[in-house]
Picture 1 (cartoon, rainbow, N blue to C red):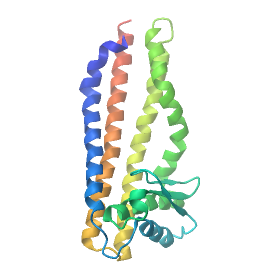
Picture 2 (picture 1 turned 180 degrees about the horizontal axis):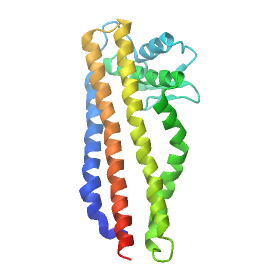
Picture 3 (picture 1 turned 30 degrees about the vertical axis):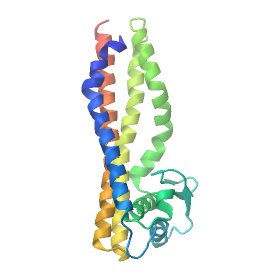
Picture 4 (picture 1 turned 135 degrees about the vertical axis):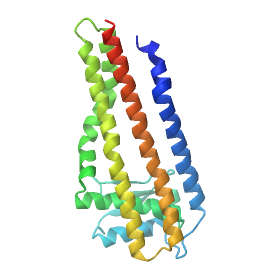
Length: 234
């Protein structure tokens, strides 16, 4: 039965969960550190995002404030960059880096960057798969031997879509950061120390996506071992 295989979780998933927690702590602490360093020219997060949008002919994209901490994101359907309270009007190097990153996503969509198009396309099936995967696996394992074991394999296949999503997310996020830093360098509005600090913030944020992929891969392997082992014993 399912519950007798928790050692798979302990051996495979738990270390990756710890890695993810460390990555999240790192991005929070790095953001806090560089939130205390302001840009010499007083450039805010809003200014940073607006600069990149204008330079790429995307002045029609709105920039709005959204509540919360590190809730910054680009909404391609509404064509809006939403910046959190700690980023929108802040002139810290952390804020301008995060805002520039979100503007990088807007540029990706405008230029038809392939990985972000793939990610957007698989979001609906990924959402469905994440909801159905575990119920199907449970049903398949409980009723294995009655011809329903294939449901468990179908559940694993659906869960794997989440892993594919996390895998595609990596180049999207790394590319958005590269675009952000490149735009900051070309603008000549930031000195070397400010750009280096922004890079550190974005690198810390990128590790959270690496950790999310690691957790998803570990969980997928765990499910494969559980389903495969369960069916071999029947």
